[in-house]
Length: 158
Image (cartoon, rainbow, N blue to C red; front, side, top):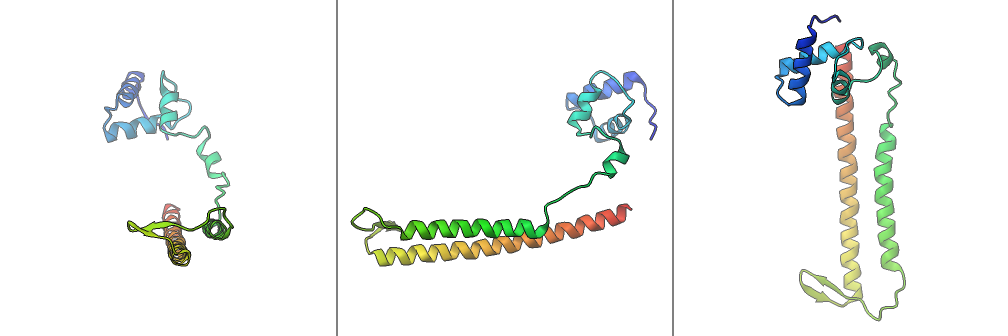
């Protein structure tokens, strides 16, 4: 795409951009001008870097393999993390200790009964497990929605 511009207009746009004073239209015009890699001006490469222009042509960019982590791998990593946390909690609670007794404060009340403390901890770990399952399900749903939106966007772009 060839965009007509004068070097002084380009320099003015670059100066406005770095001072944070460009309008949306001016920024789009600057983006259009700098999309042509043959355009050179003081600060042009800096603007390209800030605007996140890739150092490749659109054809090269389209050939990018775009590797992504599969959905099942992302979901399984969340589940594995929850399993590690639960296992660590289990072993921390069931290891022998040198302490003579067990003590906890629950809602500001001192609890010394080891059985009662274990029930409280087990209940909390169960809640963590349920929350982890809910989060995993929510993440999976969100990723599926995002995937559908991206597929729709890609289809309409073609």
